[in-house]
Image 1 (cartoon, rainbow, N blue to C red):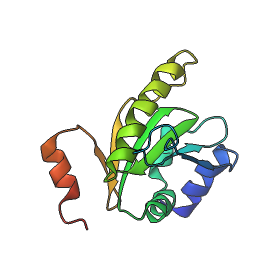
Image 2: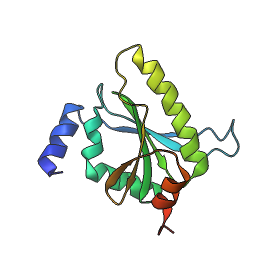
Image 3: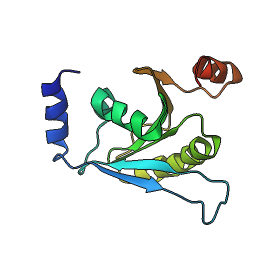
Length: 138
């Protein structure tokens, strides 16, 4: 994405990006953190096109395999796909947010996407897809 388009997208969200660490390990001992992103009042699904943001998220997670959900216009979640206790906790949490956002008509999608090597893949939760996603990763 050209830098001017990325700047325009961030300007639409008032330039405010808030990344929160969601850590439930005090109540679920095996849980690993995932992250919630809030940007202004309207997130908009086009944030998925901001490559710089996702490269930073991948660097933060120390993986090129980032799972992402966009349940509502004001929130998205991301996690290390390979971290079973992070990824598998994020998905139902996001699902509940998606259902709750319907009341305010701000829902986006119940789907999960995986970003691998700068490409987006719709997650379909099959063993075959899991093998395809993780082949060649350390």
